[in-house]
Length: 613
Image 1 (cartoon, helix red, strand yellow):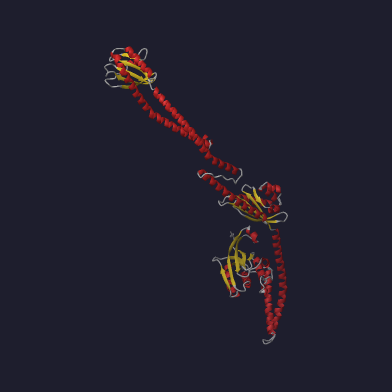
Image 2 (tube, rainbow, N blue to C red):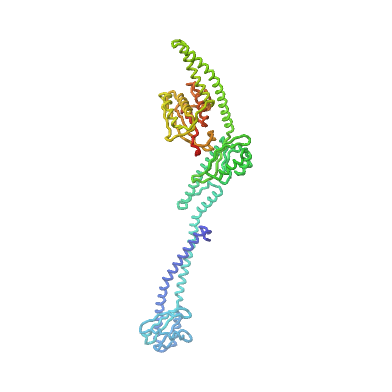
């Protein structure tokens, strides 16, 4: 894999050299293949011409048998022509009469069958120690005077080829130098922007995130540079948005009244606000370790039940998609409301967990004081009702005796009737006080809540003003609860009367029923007795609504949200007492000018042995 370590510039130069070399080699081979046959043909024609020229001068000495002069002549010709290797002449009987060998005539030449016939010349090649020789045989006087034989070497051809090759080599060398120069400039032009890209990328790797490239061309490298700059601009925008989001998140954390802790999937603390540190009084050296385990170990020393809390934390860390809502009691009496939720991405990948801690110690104390207050008021109301009932019994008894003794035309009769009427109303008030103080016996049994609502509909329509529209929405299936039917009817009547008083100019009253499930964590937030399925009755009016101050006092005896119908101030307190006697819960949501909604939750009844899911 050695080629992977070679730079692009070297690759371009090597490629250019290779291309020029192969091109030059191809041109050379092509020229040699084209020129060599032409040079051989030229040498052949030249040899024939020389041989014919010598033959024309050789005939007279042969006829006059002046063989010595003939030998001198052909030797002189051999000296004048560099390519001539040898010359010899044979007579008509194939005897050598002259030659240029100087010594003994070579036997292999004498035995060759190379005598031309008639006027025909013969040309062929011989392989000798000196190399390949072109042998030309020419008849003398049509063969009657013998024949002349001339041997030519390829020295001139080789010299011509050598000159051609030298010229080609010089040409190829020049082209190679020019190609390398051009390739170097091209490689430099090409690799310089790439080197800048590499340098910028290395800078990004060194956290210098805002470098850009200088775009000077419109080619592919320029397009690459522009695309890279666009990527950097998008990264800068993304980084800015991320920094803003992070700043907002940090501000939200630090301004939150809750303690917040964020840990990743490896148990490392990613962030926590100062409120969390102050609530648990965790030292700075533990926070600096960024270890959830170290912080948890410190927190366990402050928890009332450390083993249970540690088990819960381990369970949540091992079950990534679980959520948690629970209360934590500390040794010093502080109570935290603890919520935990997983941090997951769009691909449902688990990244860590968020913990929220809220100090609800004061809320718990206020809730307990409110319960004690209501209990004390109930005892007081029950005592007053008991004594007042005895007084009313005497008043009603004497009033009836007086009514029976006076005549029907007695002018005091209307007064007695008013006394009896007022005493009966006072007796009803006494019964309501008994209900609030939980001193009245209830007939508890499984009942269909939807049937109770349907039965009370006629009473409610007579109770409401004509300008109030009543709508009742109940599911088709039975909604079974363990309750006193008359008491639930009383709850509906009291809530309807309260809604009527809140809509003096008319409006809309809607009563709905249904079911809702609460688990062990949710009941802590709603202050229910037990987890399970609850039947819910919602009573919604479009009246004047209430502010928070009135909502906080709405269930107190003799309090009314409006200045009308003051004598029904205790009706909502009675509703509260009835609901609590049924182990239920009542909540209210309202805003001034937007109406009010009361929601009453009663435990659903189930057959023996059946569990509520």
